[in-house]
Length: 157
Image 1 (cartoon, rainbow, N blue to C red):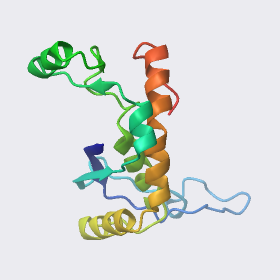
Image 2 (cartoon, helix red, strand yellow):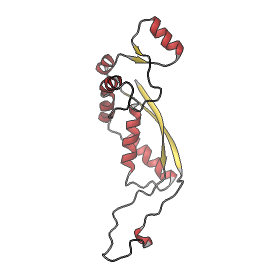
Image 3 (cartoon, rainbow, N blue to C red):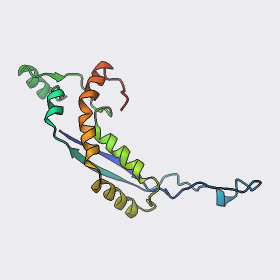
Image 4 (cartoon, one colour):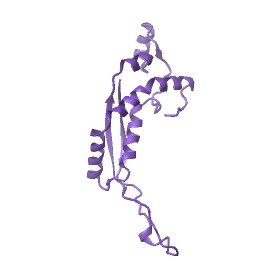
């Protein structure tokens, strides 16, 4: 199985820490205020990952395809598949979880320019712990069951 998608990352000043003021100081003094940018520069990152596990594939044997020609062939061939598969389901798109983890890891890192942002994203991507990918892939059977149980409504993943 292969999960692919893209995500937007924005240039930010993640160097924020806690601000401590002396009692009685002006909380609106510019040195105590964070400056924000209404429309920060951003970049689109594309990525994919795969994890092959026979046990996961056997337990998640229901196949999902939405093209009419494919669903007709699957039906004619008597292959089990989910006919009302949601076309854009974050519940089943494991890479959405991966992007979320990477964005969380960027907090506190210097992403103040597009170059720095790109560098940090690449570093995080290349140094990703593969057991996290394995855990995401292994969660697929339970995600599928939960999606079926909830009839396509959001699930807790």
